[in-house]
Length: 176
Ligand SMILES: CC(=O)SCCNC(=O)CCNC(=O)[C@H](O)C(C)(C)COP(=O)(O)OP(=O)(O)OC[C@H]1O[C@@H](n2cnc3c(N)ncnc32)[C@H](O)[C@@H]1OP(=O)(O)O
Ligand SMILES: [Zn+2]
Image 1 (cartoon, rainbow, N blue to C red):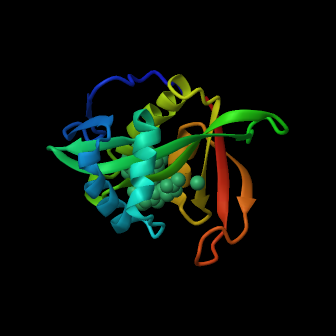
Image 2 (image 1 turned 90 degrees about the vertical axis):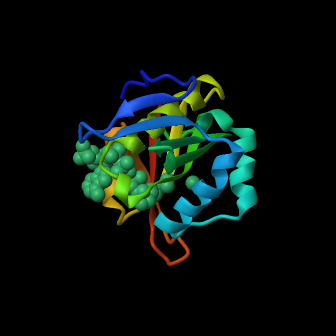
């Protein structure tokens, strides 16, 4: 997957329906209430407010939101860590971590998650020195798994009972 996307300023894009315009940009503090509301609406994995603030403070270039008609409809929250590679076993690397992704139901299948992910991945690489990126996803979450596969991620492991309801996670990773 090419990371041929800009990481500077707001980017206006056309949805896959050929008519919905959306904007991809870095999140600001003023977006956090919307981001938190979307997270609570679309995912069972929720976090205290400080967790969102901390990611925005530490990795602002890789905390991306999407807007349709001036309304925030999606987010990607990321971080970069130093740890064992999920791509080259035994090597310690700076690895990007996609912590949470969500798009409101009414704004799905337009390419918004794809565009936000590409921008977050490129930002992790060029601003924070990540050479690869990984994430966890529920083994039953077919839409998200196919999104990640299209972006070049591969399943590199399975984490038993990762989620609080007992479901396993796939560990997926992609070189940058
Ligand atoms: C690390 C984590 O956060 S894991 C959890 C991920 N988040 C969630 O599961 C929250 C609930 N789901 C969502 O918010 C959304 O459905 C997302 C984020 C998974 C996808 O957002 P979207 O903006 O709709 O994705 P986008 O339009 O870029 O889709 C890209 C590709 O992903 C795949 N995809 C997306 N949704 C679906 C679906 N419902 N069924 C099958 N494939 C899908 C398709 O391959 C799609 O390409 P296509 O539309 O050309 O077929
Ligand atoms: Zn994670």
